[in-house]
Image (cartoon, rainbow, N blue to C red; front, side, top):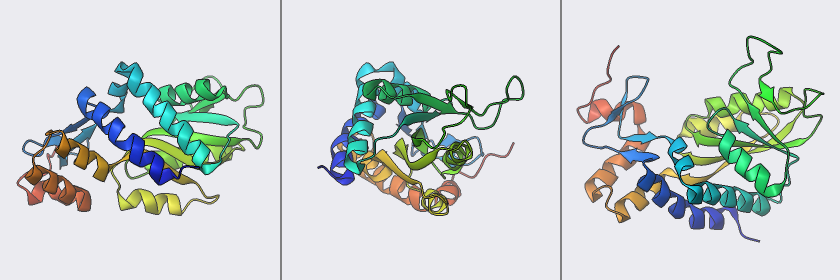
Length: 232
């Protein structure tokens, strides 16, 4: 049986190629993006652009299925985070003929006030094993909230799968605090993405070095390189 590392070593570069070509991952070291926080960052990730390619969607579903097999995890339900995780959870659930649900960031303020949709009449997972599907793990905050919502709805959620991660220590630390335990795995990680971008000439060798420095201090990187935060 293939290990998670073997699977991500295979699918990660393939997904990086698709993400860079489709603009799902964009790199601008010389003219950094302004994130919502006001910080200037050399990367912008919008995995919704992957939806434009049937091949990219299938690649994500295939990789997630291989990761499940490696972990010998056969979930009863595939849950996607709203909204970005929903299409990929749907692809995987259809591929495996599994029930599917999705988790909002909070409960609705009208109707039944539900945070999770797709649970049927009982309104809970009733002890089912649930796989959470995310598109991006940044600091891990939104993923943690979704895992907690699943647990609150009587679901067991030992794993979260995502398309991409920046590799921030904050995400690792946040998941490490979860009880019950939930481990996250991603198809593509930051280092593989940077190497793929370099090998395909999306960035120069010097820009690749600057991208590596960003990951070490993302919120100090901009100011250190002449791009102070934008105040609103």
